[in-house]
Image 1 (cartoon, rainbow, N blue to C red):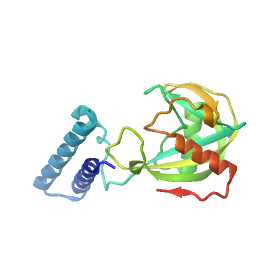
Image 2: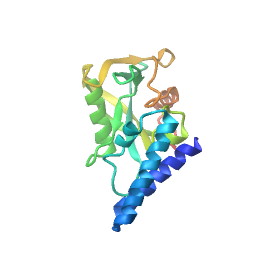
Image 3: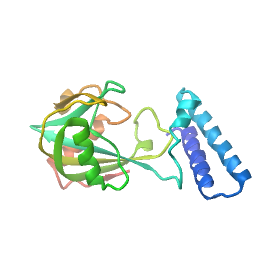
Length: 205
């Protein structure tokens, strides 16, 4: 794990919490300065424009907590459902950010339908992974927990959309190029292992 990246995250969290609970205008200015420094540090680490990095945090306020990414494993005839992201032209398990006022079950079912056109049910938790301690790339400047579920395919037809250009089922030994910021081969292997042995212990961390 990149220690500089961890320091960037800590500075951002300190700034966010400080702006939430502080009332003194001078303290608020200082916390804005801390945020600005963290943005510049991450921009340098990721070789991205400072403006792009700062935009990631526009909606962030309140006490800093991890974001939740939900991902679905949907297996049919020994093959797993993947969708191709237009953003990087690579493939991933269907999923995305969990929404406020919905349960993880509701979120992963919604994401599968929105990204693929398939209706799934009965999600079973396979893993909760801290994105920062696994080799997803590129790194993100905020903390993310990734929740993986094994879901049952009910119905539907593949439907491309504004985010997804292709939809398909793939065998484990015939996986296309994966979107490494979202899904790794080990995630898919883990889902197949769970599907073949439902008594497998849920992975955490």
